[in-house]
Image (cartoon, rainbow, N blue to C red; front, top):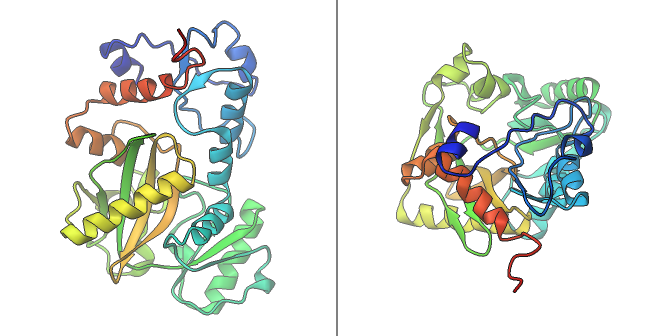
Length: 302
C-alpha cells in the first residue's frame, strides 16, 4: 500500500504499530498536516482493540480513513449488529446468543455457531455447522471455553455467498459483487468461508473456494442486493468503505456480517472489485484519503 500510494502521488509515511502506546507513535505528526490511513486492526497485547485505535485518533484530533470508533465498537459485537439489523427490518439469519451450553434452546437446523466478538472468521471451522442439538451444545461449550465470550448461534443459510464492497459517504457506490463459489464441496460443513479458507493457503478450503467477480445475478437480484447492502452500510455507520457479507436463499439476501474495516490487501475481494471497474490499488488508497479529507477540521473555511 505504501508503494502504491507513493506511485499515486500521496507521499505516505508508514507508521508500524508495534506497541499499545499509539499516542507516542503519533507525537511527531500534526493533525492539521496529516491524514491517517487507518489500517490497524488492534493494539499489540490488547484484545478486541480495533475500535480503541480509532478512539485514540479521535482524541488526538486526527482525520483518518474508515469508520469511527463508535461504528467499529458496534461491529465488534455481533449481537449488537444483529439487534440493529432486526430493528431496521434488514434480513439477517434468525439468531440467539448464549453464555453456557446448558442454556441452549434452539430448534432450527442446520445452525452455525460463532464467537460473538471475533472477526476474520476466528473460531469458525467445519465443526461450526451443527445439524442437531447435541452437536450444537458441544460447539457452544467449546467456543465459550476457548474464547471466553458469549456465543452467537444462527440459522445456517446454505445458499450462495456474496461479499459486496461499497465506498463513499454522502454518495455511496456499490462495487461489483463477488461470489464465494462452493461447488467443489458436497458437504454443507465445508460450504463456509472459515478461518482456514481465508488464511491457510495449503488448506482444501483455501484452494477450492473460488471467487467469481462479478457475481452472476438477474436484474431483480442485483437490485435487491444493492438495496440491502446500501441500507446495511448506512444504518451500521460505515464510512469511506466497507464490505457486507451475505447469503442468498429463496430470493432473500441475508446479511451475515458487516465489515467497516475490511481487509484491503491487494488480493482481497474489495480490491479486486475496485480493479474490475478500473481503479488501481494506489487509486483505491488515494480515494480513501480523499474521502477522509472531506472531514478535515479546516475544510470549507475561508
